[in-house]
Length: 129
Image 1 (cartoon, rainbow, N blue to C red):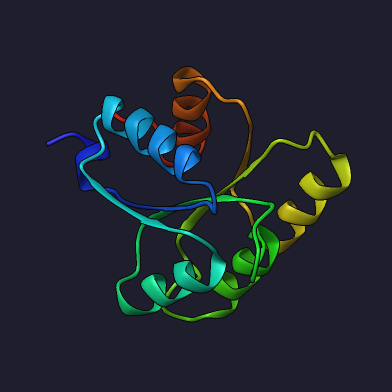
Image 2 (image 1 turned 90 degrees about the horizontal axis):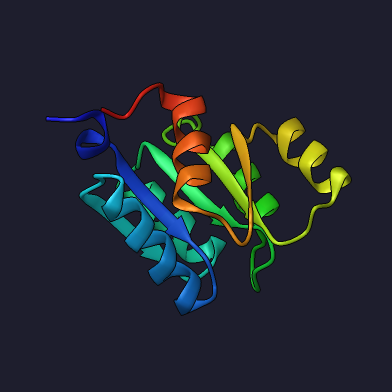
């Protein structure tokens, strides 16, 4: 069993298309345990009930944005060790710095390629194969 098959991934994005693209890319990389949420509030509910190893979250969402969600994950004892990759269409340095301060493991720019996603994940977990 590959590392990718063992990792439980939570995708958090308010746009259905983005969730589908992320899920498809993860499936192509060999991930099998993928859950999706529409915003940070729903994502935190899922994480509290069933912690995942990796969270890939959009930054710009209603209710609770990616940074708020990241902060909630990091301050919860049962979820704080999860790897967290923030996804953003904004190449905003301040956002990247804030995400790093809050404990993001990586930042992935939209639009992403499968290769860039793989590199972002492998920077956190090591080689997936």
